[in-house]
Length: 334
Image (tube, rainbow, N blue to C red; front, side, top):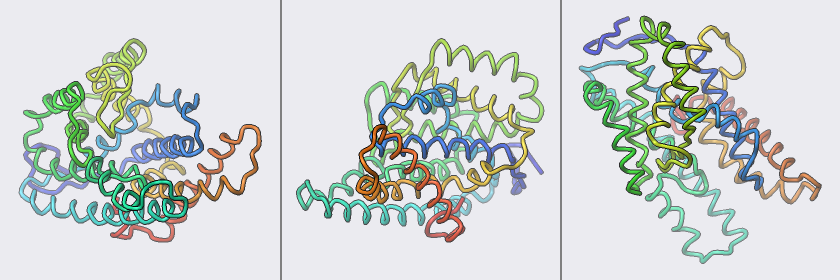
């Protein structure tokens, strides 16, 4: 296996068990947060504490993609076309599924003008890259653009890597929002390229710097300058943009290195199917919530009960969908 930046042959990159475990852990967290939102719980102490430690859960997926990106400098156009086919079809399919579900539910309990029921989701799609029938689709679209641009940008990573988060910071500071929800594109590409660079440095450098440099950096930034960013809209909700970026890199490296000796378990299976879990659970929650509200009695602590049941349904039905459809090219290609 070649690892140099000027490699002209496709690399064979072995699958790392701990990468799947980390992805599985973060997918479980995403499902938990969204289940709480659907249950009307806006502030959950468990989710809040989790995000305090793992505030870098969204950058992780771009970083992981970059780590496993195969450097094929002589086949950039072919590689870009392959990635477009692998992600564009699922994106269009899930947009159609989400649109159909949301319009049907809006028509059933309509409180908005009829034209807004049909055209409101389209307007939102053009502005944010997703619609209410499947809000997490912004990730799949950003992921698609990062993969496409990363295929070419990897040739110039040493030159553009430091500037990418600066562009993202400028957009956030000026309140600039790009169409299709692509304000996060520069930050996503930054973490993607960090992943490609990390794969090269990991064998000979990371073990030497993990405790004297990476661990203190993560602890200092998280305890003294804790920052959280809404990756969907590229906006710092808490703290400082540079602290979030640097802290995320340190946190990702620290978590990856600390889990490198773990063996396979159920989280690994979830991580291997992370994209399908990510795009399938929201439509499931959209369908299950009105049914659940009508079925469960109004008991004390009902929001917590709703959240727990919604989480169980979102997880189990997403898992069932994975077992049924497998790697259908119209629904997902990991």
